[in-house]
Length: 470
Image 1 (cartoon, one colour):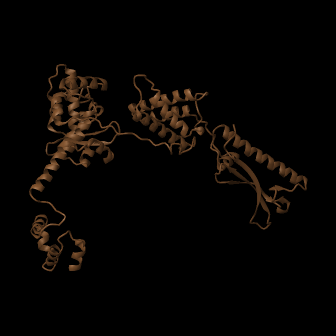
Image 2 (cartoon, rainbow, N blue to C red; image 1 turned 30 degrees about the vertical axis):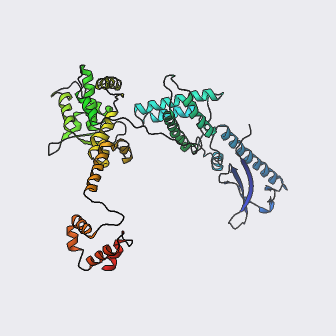
Image 3 (spheres, one colour; image 1 turned 135 degrees about the horizontal axis):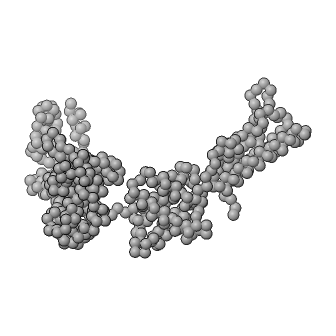
């Protein structure tokens, strides 16, 4: 197959700045439109013996013929370095070829797609939580199956990675689930592509492939609205009759998360040392989230305190370190399904609903600002909080009732502006102190003149009118 890479070596002379007025012979390395690099071959050369048109020494003497042979060897060595780098999928730039000629170039590592997945997995083992690392294992599984299906060698060098590979892999993931009963939807496939993009970006920084391979492939993940409980549903969960102690414990952990915003995995590791009282007797919970290690501060509501009193550590207990007895995530979700059925819900109750219930029903819909909810939920940025902080119908209704009250009271501004009496009442209501200190006898007539002469809203900015009056 014809190589798409370009390479060339030419020679020329440069006049030296010395008393002898001699020249240096310079080799010029060109490769793949990268910046050319010069390599000094001989520092003292009589320019009269150089054929500038041919870019070669004149062969008048035995010494010049020997020098020409030396230049041939230099060119052959540079060509061999280029070919070796090309074969090993090395970095093909003029600078890298020059460095290899001078013995400064590091040995290039030939990395394939499957080798990248292994290297990245080993790297992320020390950086990611087990749950996130497990997802990379699933992504690597899809990549391995795709390479076995598409390529005779069951793999592809990273240097050959292009848009076609990425696009075809995405389609393959959608149509070829690893488990027949668990196909990937578009969001799931995009998550796999998002993880691949992270690995490829790292490979680009290491020099194993192009840095912009994903430039034309857009990661589009459609946010799915996670269900949350409204107050009526939350009360049902709290009050439904349960028999098994394990089911009651699961409910306690779930409801505790509803009133604190904790993720189930964080509640499972909550320790007594993470609870403390302030000078007013309020109980605060401080912890770092398992997922992101971002700290969260939450003052406990009465319901959360009741659960701690009922299920927390007994005085002097030493058989466990955490407040709640350990329950696996599978057991929690299994028993939550049972609780949901007992409550008569037409949806499946699951553990993460608790965190969304806190961010929506317990905080936002009761008027807690998003910035405060962000601190309690341990979010690094406000955008993450806004996913949880749905305004919801109750808060919308509260504001619309206020609007109706203003309409009923005549507190509206029409297209013809407001009358003088309304204007004065508004000023008195908003800033009684301002009326005494700012609106002098000189300014007030100007304001009244604007109101009387303009039946419609004044076109002149009020600030300009005030400026002309003072």
